[in-house]
Length: 68
Image 1: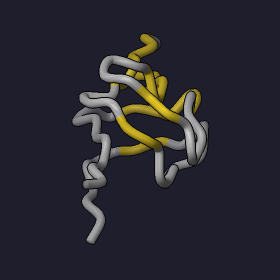
Image 2: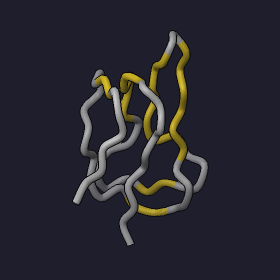
Image 3: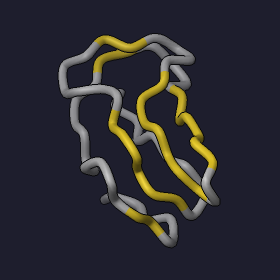
């Protein structure tokens, strides 16, 4: 079952660490965010395969959004 990876903060995406098709483990970094001059890793909650990357690097977010 595919799950979205979400971060509930205002931040910019510094780097998308994974690519579609990558195998990841629980605790692996999937994205690096920047907020208030701090780098914040977003970690995978479970092992699996990356099926889709929906955001490019260097993207700013101001509020959480959901996908259908």
